[in-house]
Image (cartoon, rainbow, N blue to C red):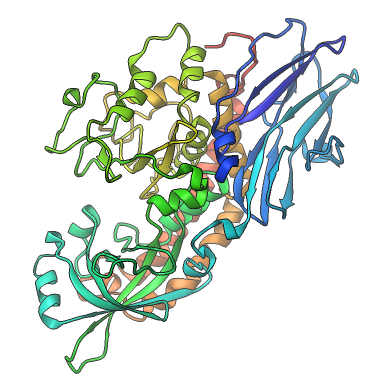
Length: 554
């Protein structure tokens, strides 16, 4: 989050700091290791500096945006903001004209520690710092820029025998999978296991069903550029198609782990039927969360942890409530475990997850800050807050704390810390959705959501969430930026829709071409209204989120 420092009038300094970062390899372990939180301040201190950055992690070259959010003089005015962007001790960047906000481009892979220095009218100064981990592109085993190139529409053709095709399509919800060849982005692959995927998006899809291609189930070791599984999403509930892609873009900008997403046209070729391949529409190719996803973001030190996924359609709502010390205490509303264990070869007793839930919700603490310190020891709270900022911006309700759906939990074995990983992004339309509370207007399945509810009792978490929302609105979630992003993706995939996407067919399609353009415009309109609400809330009610270290707040 941020490093903190306040200034006594006689220049007696007290340091406060909390550093939660995501990185790669050993840097990831160090970044995720807990640090102490010092809470004592002299009562006469008045000058407070804070520093936030977005994103705080990524591949070089990496543009980052820095914020002084929360910096203030309780008895005066800050007259100067200066940044040391490269961590060499020299405050070379004067950001006074932009009220302390600035940006920079980091080209060399390493960990940077940018620092902010604020000066008040009496010449007193305070500093704060944050951290950015920049990884070398070669640290990734997957060439994401080529496979998920979002500046073009790729093509995937799947070759089925007529018999296999009829068997799959007789009832797609059975998810029958067959051996088939495929040409993926110009490269032919043989004996790939292919079949329908999904739940709700499969049941309502009509002809344009979502697909899953497993490259190594039938041919051990066969991969597509180090990917074992390709997921084709139909976006059937989004006439614009691009909503989920934009949500993942925002997560990446925020510094939250995010799947890469590209666009592809899908063709079905029935072998020896004498017909041209059938055009099946434009899909998004979405990177799945698996061991390679984790290693490419956190390094080899993250190998060997346990991965859990929530899916209320199958398992029920992942509420993160502590129900008891053993798995038998936990509800199984659909006859299967509440949390889907995705790691092979580990005990099925869920002991590691239950211990996490005990710290989060089972143990009693004497104050919200005591809870926060205990949870930070085992959970990447900063990563969760970055994720939460994006979900709040796009008004998503099919998530924690509403449905307990669409997230992964991964225990980083070296850091002994749980990571929150996003999945299945959707937009809402309630532009007045509260920023620091659960809405009473949005649909909700959870009776309690202890992670969300308890973090909102911690003032420094509320300020961090506000800071990330503020940065997100300044950088990407505003009408100007969203108009450009939407227009680029809309114009890119429009030809693929106009050439006969079955979801937009006048003969049984769920949508119309007109609804595609209207839905794209709706993303811009929603962003305009929601970003205005965020700006107004932060401007009008600072007492709901500003944190003054050392002072108890409601």
